[in-house]
Length: 93
Image (cartoon, rainbow, N blue to C red; front, side, top):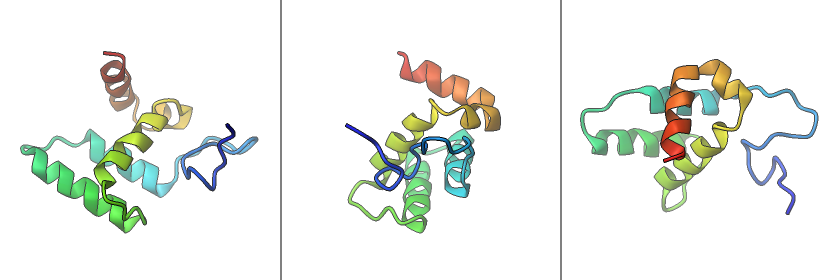
């Protein structure tokens, strides 16, 4: 199965440089924040996703799917190395 950038906005194009867009940086910034209550984080995720066109029934699930793909991106590691290390360790559990 071939993945195209049209199907998955965070997928890398063949020879395109690995650069995070505004949405991906906003996702990492949001994930790096500490929230006292889970509901506040869920609301922030929903707001971010809706602002960027993800209006499906489960924007929080899509958020974490995209976040999971960012773990494989060198640009994400350059942007937020401590966060990416924490996420990679969490994923490997």
